[in-house]
Amino acid sequence: MTRPILVVEGIEKAYLGRDGVLRALRDISFEVGAGEFVTILGPSGCGKTTLLRILGGLLEPAEGKIYIDGHLLSKPRREVGFVFQAPSLLPWRTVLGNATLPLEIQKQNGLSAKEKALELLELVGLWGFENAYPHELSGGMQQRVAIARALIHDPSILLLDEPFGSLDAITREQMNLELLRIWEASKKTVVMVTHDIQEAIFLADRVLIMSPRPGHIEAIVPIDLPRPRRPEMVYDESFSGLFQRVHRLIG
Ligand SMILES: Nc1ncnc2c1ncn2[C@@H]1O[C@H](COP(=O)(O)OP(=O)(O)OP(=O)(O)O)[C@@H](O)[C@H]1O
Ligand SMILES: [Mg+2]
View 1: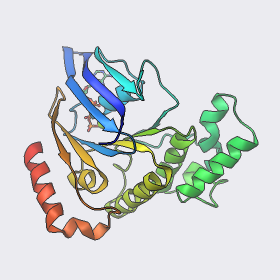
View 2: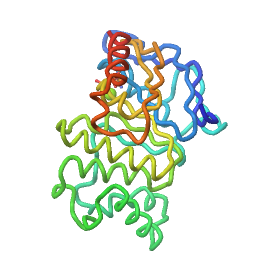
View 3: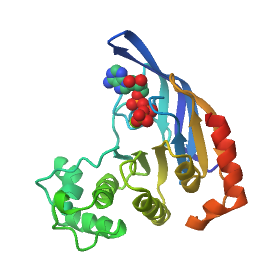
View 4: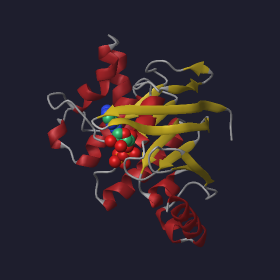
């Protein structure tokens, strides 16, 4: 692994629910190297979103520490971009207006914000759509806007929570290839949550496997498939070997 950019140490989290305390995460520890692509795989309700929100500084853990590039995390930071399960765009703003929003909130609007956003929209394959409104876009295109918006601060780490979960299988495969292209071009560190085994293996350098609730890192599987990844690779013997291994660990 390269120099660790994200260090997670002993994270614990519980929620106070209707039936008392619900333990969501149990002693989560791992590291992610700079420029690495890590996927987190686990069953529904195991605490994946909870973990990602904690990594993004959006939720506080009960115990444990997170270091981003050596700095203790205590609130959301510009070095971290977040893409939610749903694209959550503002319907009354254009594609460009949605992409520049984080900069406007910090009063950094102006020509450079617009230029930056246009560059990112080109990177995510939305060149020519900057003046369209969200309802004029497909689901995949909306999620691309959300990715551009997350990249606008030039974060070193991009956190993605099942970003393509609501898309059909064909669009999803396309979006996976797009994401790898963006990752390779922008040299970001990516941590992506998914519950799709094939997607987790296809994208990642390493797959982190979570247990059912309370979520715990059960295993870490290195994915030694060559890059760039090609869609046909899923038919290779090495891919199905990894699939079987991960499937057994999840089961
Ligand atoms: N705000 C909350 N208050 C109470 N319980 C919560 C809250 N958010 C999550 N939980 C509970 O914590 C557990 C983990 O939820 P979380 O959303 O992190 O799971 P997940 O792995 O992302 O699931 P999915 O794959 O369905 O998105 C679940 O049992 C959920 O009911
Ligand atoms: Mg979730």
